[in-house]
Length: 106
Length: 129
Image (cartoon, rainbow over all chains, first blue to last red; front, side):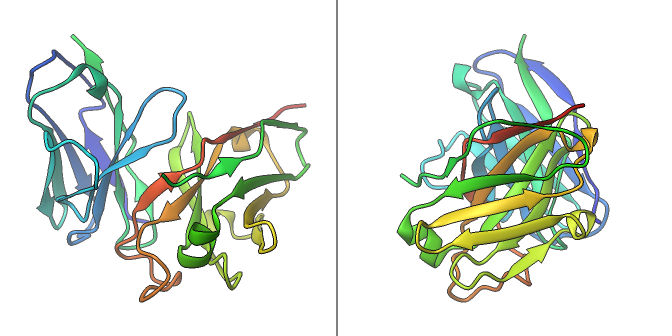
């Protein structure tokens, strides 16, 4: 299986900050990388698909980039509702998820 | 708004089986593949498999191949995931999730480009003696 490694595992930030989360695949996955947001007690929510496409209804402060093995999720100006855990997911070879990045209030 | 409504929490003993349900709308049932995913403290999010609700065909993750069965009831547009030979490590929240690709032009044998655009609320399964 393709291993997905996210960094950092946790991150402290303040409202208004620009935040970047990284996801690295153990082999090339081309553009087949998705990002999800999960809040406590809730199901994950799709933010970005195919590395850089914004899911309908998701605020434009979220963006994704990358291809091959290295990908990033960027939140341009952190809002109070963005404090959550973020997961990457590859769908090039079967389906695997990263271990998550917990975004906390500084 | 897409609604996927799952069954309630379960407590099972080791060695038993559990069957979790996920009720979908007729549109979702007819036009989209559906996945099952579980979330554990130890292994995070794990993909378990995919089902075509219309035809019933399935594609399971190798890890669960011997223990999982995904079925559906077309009369009630409900999906089911049954996991057998439960052990403590199966304690998890189980989710159904919709594949945004849609059935037309896609196959559940090729997962490339899948993404999950709607999720059930989750079902906690606790395995304990």
